[in-house]
Length: 195
Ligand code: SF4
Image 1: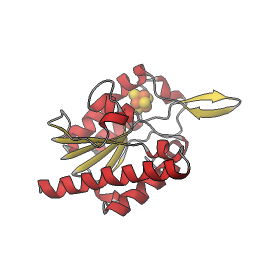
Image 2: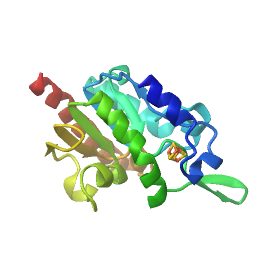
Image 3: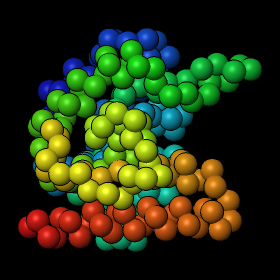
Image 4: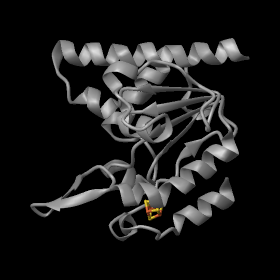
Protein backbone atom coordinates (compact mmCIF):
# COMPACT_ATOMS: atom_id res chain seq x y z
CA UNK A 1 0.00 0.00 0.00
CA UNK A 2 2.86 2.36 0.79
CA UNK A 3 4.40 1.82 -2.66
CA UNK A 4 1.00 2.50 -4.24
CA UNK A 5 0.57 5.62 -2.12
CA UNK A 6 3.91 6.98 -3.32
CA UNK A 7 2.87 6.49 -6.96
CA UNK A 8 -0.50 8.16 -6.47
CA UNK A 9 1.02 11.15 -4.65
CA UNK A 10 2.88 12.08 -7.83
CA UNK A 11 0.07 11.22 -10.26
CA UNK A 12 -0.67 13.72 -13.02
CA UNK A 13 -2.96 11.50 -15.08
CA UNK A 14 -5.81 14.01 -15.21
CA UNK A 15 -6.50 17.74 -15.10
CA UNK A 16 -7.25 17.69 -11.38
CA UNK A 17 -3.53 17.46 -10.66
CA UNK A 18 -3.21 21.10 -11.78
CA UNK A 19 -5.48 22.59 -9.12
CA UNK A 20 -4.97 20.25 -6.17
CA UNK A 21 -3.06 21.22 -3.05
CA UNK A 22 -2.70 17.64 -1.82
CA UNK A 23 -3.52 14.25 -3.25
CA UNK A 24 -5.93 12.57 -0.85
CA UNK A 25 -4.89 8.96 -1.14
CA UNK A 26 -6.95 7.50 1.70
CA UNK A 27 -6.14 6.32 5.19
CA UNK A 28 -6.80 3.65 7.74
CA UNK A 29 -5.93 0.03 8.30
CA UNK A 30 -4.66 -1.56 5.04
CA UNK A 31 -6.01 -4.87 6.36
CA UNK A 32 -9.40 -3.46 7.27
CA UNK A 33 -12.53 -5.59 6.97
CA UNK A 34 -14.54 -2.51 6.01
CA UNK A 35 -13.68 0.04 3.33
CA UNK A 36 -15.65 3.26 2.88
CA UNK A 37 -15.51 5.02 -0.48
CA UNK A 38 -16.77 8.53 -1.17
CA UNK A 39 -16.80 10.54 -4.39
CA UNK A 40 -13.81 12.84 -3.95
CA UNK A 41 -12.01 15.25 -1.65
CA UNK A 42 -13.46 18.67 -0.79
CA UNK A 43 -11.77 21.82 0.40
CA UNK A 44 -10.58 20.59 3.81
CA UNK A 45 -9.46 17.26 2.44
CA UNK A 46 -7.48 19.07 -0.26
CA UNK A 47 -5.86 21.30 2.37
CA UNK A 48 -4.92 18.45 4.70
CA UNK A 49 -4.43 15.50 2.36
CA UNK A 50 -6.82 13.43 4.52
CA UNK A 51 -10.24 12.01 3.54
CA UNK A 52 -13.46 13.06 5.28
CA UNK A 53 -12.09 15.72 7.63
CA UNK A 54 -14.47 18.63 6.90
CA UNK A 55 -17.98 19.02 8.31
CA UNK A 56 -19.17 15.93 6.47
CA UNK A 57 -16.23 13.98 7.89
CA UNK A 58 -17.09 15.10 11.41
CA UNK A 59 -20.66 13.90 10.96
CA UNK A 60 -19.39 10.59 9.61
CA UNK A 61 -17.03 10.22 12.59
CA UNK A 62 -19.86 10.91 15.02
CA UNK A 63 -22.11 8.30 13.42
CA UNK A 64 -19.31 5.74 13.24
CA UNK A 65 -18.70 6.21 16.98
CA UNK A 66 -22.41 5.95 17.67
CA UNK A 67 -22.71 2.56 15.96
CA UNK A 68 -19.52 1.20 17.53
CA UNK A 69 -17.16 1.38 14.55
CA UNK A 70 -13.69 2.84 15.06
CA UNK A 71 -12.37 4.98 12.22
CA UNK A 72 -8.81 3.70 12.71
CA UNK A 73 -10.00 0.12 12.16
CA UNK A 74 -11.55 0.99 8.79
CA UNK A 75 -10.08 2.22 5.53
CA UNK A 76 -11.52 5.42 4.06
CA UNK A 77 -10.89 6.72 0.57
CA UNK A 78 -12.56 8.24 -2.50
CA UNK A 79 -13.13 7.47 -6.16
CA UNK A 80 -10.93 10.38 -7.25
CA UNK A 81 -7.93 11.36 -5.19
CA UNK A 82 -7.73 15.06 -6.07
CA UNK A 83 -10.32 17.77 -5.43
CA UNK A 84 -12.61 18.62 -8.34
CA UNK A 85 -13.43 22.33 -8.20
CA UNK A 86 -14.36 25.22 -10.46
CA UNK A 87 -13.52 28.88 -9.89
CA UNK A 88 -16.62 30.97 -9.21
CA UNK A 89 -16.16 34.65 -8.29
CA UNK A 90 -12.52 34.15 -7.37
CA UNK A 91 -13.23 31.16 -5.14
CA UNK A 92 -12.98 27.45 -5.83
CA UNK A 93 -16.26 25.59 -5.51
CA UNK A 94 -16.52 21.82 -5.38
CA UNK A 95 -17.99 20.14 -8.44
CA UNK A 96 -18.56 16.48 -9.26
CA UNK A 97 -15.56 14.87 -10.97
CA UNK A 98 -15.97 14.48 -14.75
CA UNK A 99 -16.30 11.05 -16.33
CA UNK A 100 -12.80 11.43 -17.82
CA UNK A 101 -11.37 12.16 -14.35
CA UNK A 102 -13.12 9.17 -12.82
CA UNK A 103 -11.86 7.02 -15.69
CA UNK A 104 -8.28 8.22 -15.13
CA UNK A 105 -8.40 7.72 -11.36
CA UNK A 106 -10.41 4.55 -10.78
CA UNK A 107 -7.35 2.36 -11.31
CA UNK A 108 -5.93 3.69 -8.03
CA UNK A 109 -9.09 2.83 -6.11
CA UNK A 110 -9.22 -0.59 -7.71
CA UNK A 111 -5.58 -1.17 -6.73
CA UNK A 112 -6.37 -0.16 -3.13
CA UNK A 113 -9.36 -2.49 -2.98
CA UNK A 114 -7.24 -5.26 -4.51
CA UNK A 115 -4.69 -4.91 -1.71
CA UNK A 116 -7.20 -4.61 1.13
CA UNK A 117 -9.77 -7.13 -0.16
CA UNK A 118 -12.43 -5.94 2.31
CA UNK A 119 -15.27 -8.08 3.60
CA UNK A 120 -17.65 -5.15 3.42
CA UNK A 121 -17.57 -2.24 0.99
CA UNK A 122 -19.53 0.88 1.93
CA UNK A 123 -20.29 3.31 -0.91
CA UNK A 124 -20.82 6.78 0.54
CA UNK A 125 -23.31 8.51 -1.73
CA UNK A 126 -24.78 7.82 -5.15
CA UNK A 127 -21.71 8.41 -7.36
CA UNK A 128 -19.63 5.81 -5.49
CA UNK A 129 -22.54 3.36 -5.65
CA UNK A 130 -23.03 3.97 -9.39
CA UNK A 131 -19.36 3.28 -10.01
CA UNK A 132 -18.88 0.31 -7.70
CA UNK A 133 -22.30 -1.37 -7.54
CA UNK A 134 -24.13 -0.65 -10.77
CA UNK A 135 -24.71 2.20 -13.20
CA UNK A 136 -27.65 4.48 -12.48
CA UNK A 137 -27.82 3.48 -8.80
CA UNK A 138 -30.91 5.03 -7.16
CA UNK A 139 -30.20 6.04 -3.56
CA UNK A 140 -33.88 6.52 -2.71
CA UNK A 141 -34.69 2.92 -3.65
CA UNK A 142 -31.46 1.02 -3.13
CA UNK A 143 -29.62 2.54 -0.16
CA UNK A 144 -29.25 0.23 2.79
CA UNK A 145 -29.68 -2.86 0.61
CA UNK A 146 -26.99 -5.56 0.51
CA UNK A 147 -25.25 -6.43 -2.75
CA UNK A 148 -23.34 -9.68 -2.62
CA UNK A 149 -20.38 -11.07 -4.53
CA UNK A 150 -19.40 -7.76 -6.04
CA UNK A 151 -16.02 -7.57 -7.80
CA UNK A 152 -14.63 -5.62 -4.83
CA UNK A 153 -16.09 -7.30 -1.75
CA UNK A 154 -18.41 -10.19 -0.83
CA UNK A 155 -20.85 -7.68 0.70
CA UNK A 156 -21.46 -4.10 -0.35
CA UNK A 157 -23.94 -1.43 0.62
CA UNK A 158 -24.60 2.23 -0.17
CA UNK A 159 -25.31 4.85 2.49
CA UNK A 160 -26.30 8.52 2.36
CA UNK A 161 -23.40 10.93 1.96
CA UNK A 162 -22.96 13.01 5.13
CA UNK A 163 -22.62 16.16 2.97
CA UNK A 164 -26.12 15.44 1.60
CA UNK A 165 -27.43 15.01 5.16
CA UNK A 166 -25.87 18.33 6.19
CA UNK A 167 -27.83 20.13 3.47
CA UNK A 168 -31.09 19.10 5.19
CA UNK A 169 -32.67 20.97 8.06
CA UNK A 170 -34.81 20.20 11.10
CA UNK A 171 -36.78 16.96 10.96
CA UNK A 172 -35.40 16.14 7.50
CA UNK A 173 -31.85 16.35 8.83
CA UNK A 174 -32.65 14.10 11.78
CA UNK A 175 -34.41 11.55 9.56
CA UNK A 176 -31.53 11.42 7.07
CA UNK A 177 -28.98 11.14 9.90
CA UNK A 178 -30.97 8.28 11.39
CA UNK A 179 -30.83 6.45 8.04
CA UNK A 180 -27.04 6.71 8.13
CA UNK A 181 -27.02 5.35 11.69
CA UNK A 182 -29.32 2.52 10.60
CA UNK A 183 -27.20 1.57 7.57
CA UNK A 184 -23.86 1.72 9.38
CA UNK A 185 -25.35 -0.39 12.17
CA UNK A 186 -26.16 -2.98 9.47
CA UNK A 187 -22.51 -2.80 8.37
CA UNK A 188 -21.23 -3.49 11.90
CA UNK A 189 -23.68 -6.36 12.31
CA UNK A 190 -22.76 -7.84 8.93
CA UNK A 191 -19.17 -8.06 10.03
CA UNK A 192 -20.10 -9.79 13.27
CA UNK A 193 -22.24 -12.28 11.32
CA UNK A 194 -19.35 -13.01 8.96
CA UNK A 195 -16.67 -13.58 11.60
FE1 SF4 B 1 -4.17 11.28 -10.75
FE2 SF4 B 1 -6.54 10.71 -9.74
FE3 SF4 B 1 -5.39 13.00 -9.08
FE4 SF4 B 1 -6.34 12.64 -11.56
S1 SF4 B 1 -7.56 12.69 -9.66
S2 SF4 B 1 -4.34 13.49 -11.01
S3 SF4 B 1 -5.92 10.46 -11.90
S4 SF4 B 1 -4.64 10.95 -8.57
